[in-house]
Image 1 (cartoon, rainbow, N blue to C red):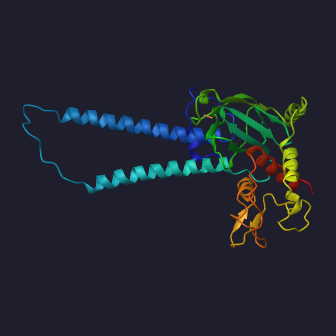
Image 2: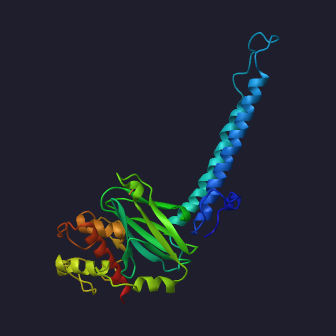
Image 3: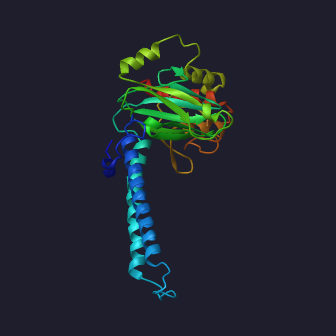
Length: 322
Ligand code: CUA
């Protein structure tokens, strides 16, 4: 990740947790810049206040207040444009760091994990089928987390990664970064979500390499069906294949083969990217955004959260199959 120019101003380590992700240095850079800037102005303002209080204190030789000018344009311009320049620096540096958290580096195949939050536990479904109450990642390999919630708003926070993202019911949020240091860290919930909010934690295990991750992913029998299998079953049970083929054959509705990630033309002339949020809407409110060339004939299918995730995982798998 390209480091922001202020990353070099990072505080001497000590009171912040160790940095274990690609975005951590950038976050610390912005934080340190704001921290030292605030410390500087705090010291300056206190010093000027104390000086003036001492210098203009009541004295016998000074019976009343002296006349002072009612304005000073030069001074007003200074205290307008210096803060403006400083907040613009903060804005530019934070935007750069923020963008690095939301878009994947081109070329790298990320390890995707579907994160589901509920009161009061985390569930992590890893690409390849392994589900767990622990988040497993690979050091040096980009990770792409897609977060959702089945009840209220939660927020996934890993202090060592310097990353936090809300898990919101009814939509999918994305978080992209690369873990850089093998080890085990704590995932905590950073959005008050009820009685056991403070106990809603989990472990994130960063494997030193892909082989170690694969060994973990193979280990143990999978007692429950994977998200992809669940999605295929839900797809069949709800009769979706009557209108939507998965092999490219045209039907009453668009074929779903290779549709994931594509930009689709809509009937109203706009376009939409086929991602988690679009698939969700097309199942729950199919009439909202109709694909160009198709009629508004599909009824809403009120699937529950995990079934929706299953269908999304299934559609993604249709892209991977040639
Ligand atoms: Cu979940 Cu706080």
